[in-house]
Image (cartoon, rainbow, N blue to C red; front, top):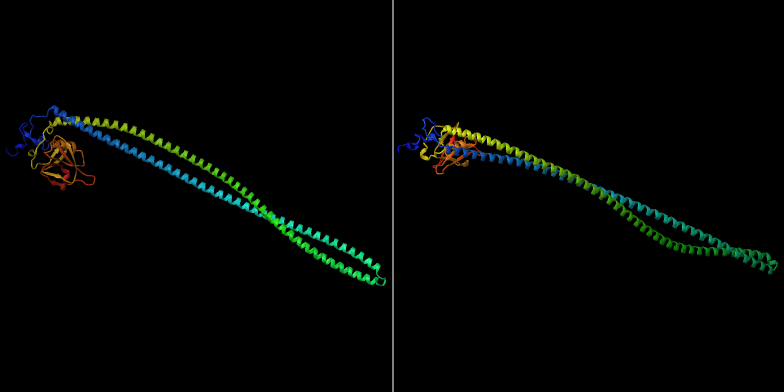
Length: 431
């Protein structure tokens, strides 16, 4: 076989690279064309691919809607956190109110203790005044009694001495009468004075003894009475104070508990109602939005994709008819590839041929296809991230697309040598 004959299709009488879309159709083609079944199959494949792409687009839109719903749920959770923060603030307020109630209760207890102490001191002063009054009255009574006893004793002694003196004077001599009278008067005066002093001393001693005994007994009785009264008063005051404190504490605690429970209940009910309303509103809005958006987007996407798929199918069918099926059924081996050809056009995009090459550091995707040109038209022409395609004849009806990554675009210098694959690269990416 002569060189180049492997690239010639004797059935159609023109170069095979024209049929696969890599050379301009400068030679008048023969009358050969693809069958209607092949064209229908290609259109069906295109429709299936478009439907697949439409389904993927719908899936992406559904994912976006789900992301929106997730954002709405996040907002709802934020609202719930805000409600929780408000509930925490209200609980802090209730704690502060409890502290204020406890402080008010302590203040009330201190005031009542001070009042009890003042009342006790007043009772002590009253008891001391009563005791002093009783002691002074008894002292005055004893002094009056002693004075009366002293007067009675002096008068009795005086009468007895006078009677004795009169008797002696009557029996004595007349001469001695004056001397006797004087002596009698002196003796009487002395006796009266001595008796008076004795009586006064005895009265004083008796009075002192009686006063001491009375004072001692009075002190004992007074101390006992004061102690009994003090104990009774203390018991009464303690009982009254304890009862008052218990009543006050019970009242304050009951009031504080009632107010606290009412405040907590009211705030909890208000917060729960608000949270429930917000949650229901968010859920309702989310459901309505998702349902409405999903239904609308899905219907629009299906309608648009159906229309676009129908249009592209019609366009492809017309193109295939115009192209006469040049690349539908033929899959060349290495012998069908020249070493070097000029830049060639595939549906308005210009490509260059790089034989025995590949790109190692790139994102790749494998696709099912019928020929290199079909792979370029379907997977690379309209994708700005596509650098080019690779064709390995060992992989039947399979091609590889080389794509830019989000972090780095493929450059011409990234193309490496590889013996089992040829590449078709966009010309503008080889600059």
